[in-house]
Image 1: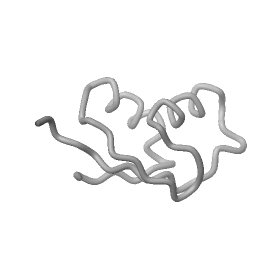
Image 2 (image 1 turned 90 degrees about the vertical axis):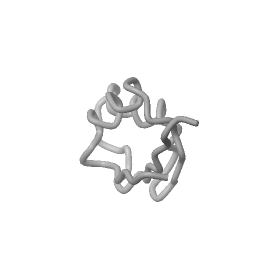
Image 3 (image 1 turned 120 degrees about the vertical axis):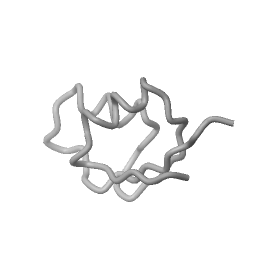
Length: 60
């Protein structure tokens, strides 16, 4: 089984650019304090790096 990451959205999406909103939505996050578990893949890591200041990440 692949490694997984638990991601929490700490900041809201208002005032963010379309690209940053798309990355957050692509990770499956919908609102503040929402948590999702995603696979640790290069695609997900790229989206995480683009919005690193808005989320917190830990191993699941």
